[in-house]
Image 1: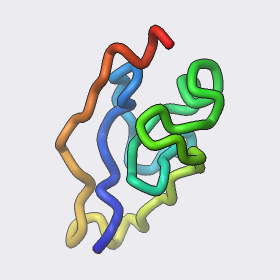
Image 2: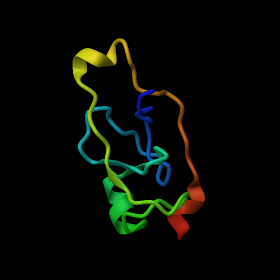
Image 3: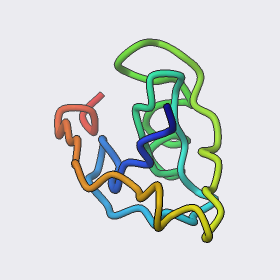
Image 4: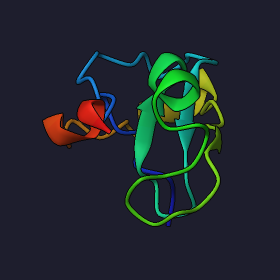
Length: 81
């Protein structure tokens, strides 16, 4: 089983590039941009309470066989924490 590599920040809904080094996830793959993780969430997942860490980048040659997810997860209430 591999990471979903979700396409957006759950907090602000900004698009996140699959090869971005500014994407953070928790152990449940909740996905956030660096700005929200730092300024709003304090590097703690609002869903599970776990630590947010940098999402690994899938090698380009593996993306064809194992593409990133297209399913968006967005919770606009997170920005008002």
